[in-house]
Length: 477
Image (cartoon, rainbow, N blue to C red; front, side, top):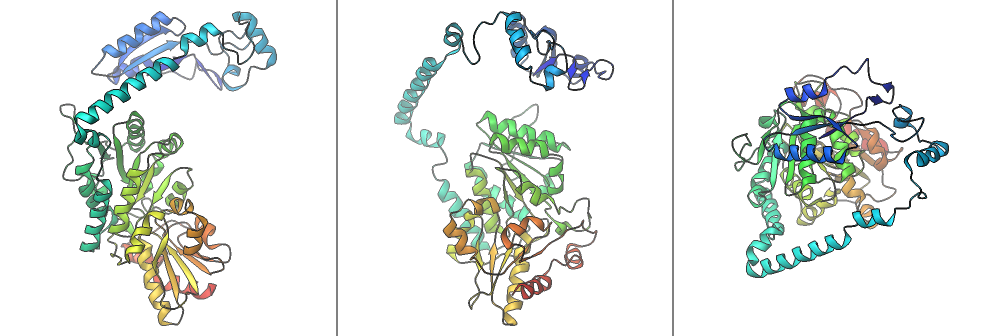
């Protein structure tokens, strides 16, 4: 790590209020510290980097002394060089001061040639491709493993088939662990961990081996440091060779927020396992009961959020997260058991689309009920009660809104026909669902913080149940 020690912040000179002895602090952390490096001396910089490379057993902090805005006659060493453009007059004066005679955006040929690695890079890539082609010819099985897993579709199909056959009613956090057991043996690059919640997140599977200072492995005990965990996994994803995943409670995603946003911004394949996803966690109370977190994560561009309703949806949510190479995925999983939902094969195939008809009405539907996760079973119970009172409704499971939004218009229209009255139900804030139900629809949710009580009691007390969903449907029809 290179620390740019220029003594300036946006508020001005830091002397007087920034009292840290940064080199001593990092020495206390156990880092190798190279202090007082002249940031304009290429020889000194090279020597510092070589010192860092030689420090194989610990990280290095290089403290580089620089002057912000160096070369600008009136702005060098000032806060204005930090937070403001230099302006035409200062730029012109800087050109004179540093002897730069070239127009804007012009790179001198000597500089361009020195930095242009196009030919070198093309040659190296061509050589690598030729070597791999020869390797593939000599060792076809190992080459397939390198591109692996070649049998991934079969792995996913077997996992989903097994979930359907067993029809287990378990918490989706447990369903997640079951999925890891099925996928882990075929993906040795999976590297997971938890922020001191392994037994709650269920992120460890039978093939997990804890990473320590003495042995390699594929599981990290991160301790209570959610941001550090998420940021480290970002680094692993960007480095390549690993598919990182990490676990904590959904409400603690707040602590990870900067790293979550950066994962989405950098398009890093990072999988965030968030359990205890709603008021359904019960007695831990409002501090732990997530109500706004699902919506806030969905609002992060390029972040896929999956909230599955049973073992089958959880398995396919994991498959989608692993297959997604251009961005992060958050899995929102329940603490409480969720009933298994029996569905037609075509419905299983449609789960990957993010939103699909999980239960069609026997008669032409008069309304649509959209649900996610633990509330899908509530929607199905309301469907039955409404059918008994002569109001047929279609139930849509929407485990991933962003995946659904990426579908073509024809699919979205087939699932959510225009003009059909709509009700959404999710144990969280309601505003997000207005994009699907409109102002004329209704949302059964939680626009307040939770309460400390058994999960079933909290759901009933806050009105997230089949009775309230049925009443909402009757109002919209």
